Image (cartoon, rainbow, N blue to C red):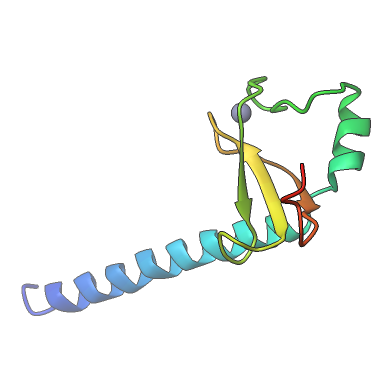
Length: 95
Ligand SMILES: [Zn+2]
């Protein structure tokens, strides 16, 4: 039995790694399939975006590929639910 323990450990390790990778790729696919901001607000029927899972209005904005990506993904800051995506114009400094 003790001979198989290292093997079982490795199989378990690979399985856990696969699960983590799978969850990550699933979330990446979900990000790309998110509704646009206009569609999200229209579906929600409110002028201000809020989380549809927990109702909080505190949202976080992150880049799709990297922090500076113009394709932005907005998710709930409280429960991490993905909400909508939008594309930020290249020059947004003039505000
Ligand atoms: Zn939420």
